[in-house]
Length: 220
Image 1 (tube, helix red, strand yellow):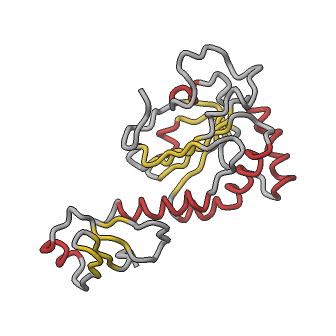
Image 2 (cartoon, helix red, strand yellow):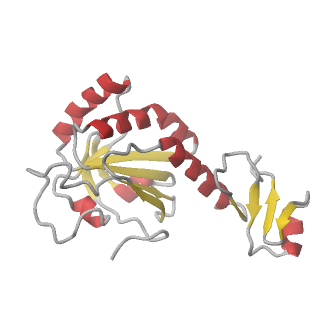
Image 3 (spheres, rainbow, N blue to C red):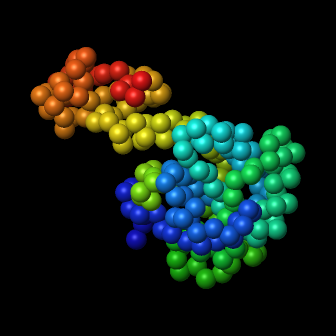
């Protein structure tokens, strides 16, 4: 069965570029971004790991841990890190899971569970569906997942934007409109009736439609 939003993210134990981890224990009370790759030493993924390494402080400010995954051994990951540093100027220091037996890829429905081979001999094209970003909350529930084609590099600024939205909407009875950025106006949930809205937002709101009420970002 496919994973869905609000499903519990499957737990796993794995070897990584920084040592062994137990996934749920590693997440702890933080949010987490798990982003997977079909093969080490591939061009687009090389730029992605470097980009995320540069942005890691932005994720940490939001109490978000980042972890990569690639279907190759730890030794290959370690060698790949040097290439990433050469290409992007930044060497990732976050863990990268070594999913040699494709166990995590299958656990997260990125590859068919009927697949019996290991990563040995498989190409990036064979593993092309292993290019998914999962955002997981402190409650270990999946909040968002996005799967990208091999030729399209991921936009981690958009990932940050979605995290800002999810963290805000998890604390306040609001939603964020299209193209929203942190600090901009938000929308009062349609489920919030007028009496409750007056208590929650005593400063009032702009009613563009009876069901579309905008207020300033309540976290400001």
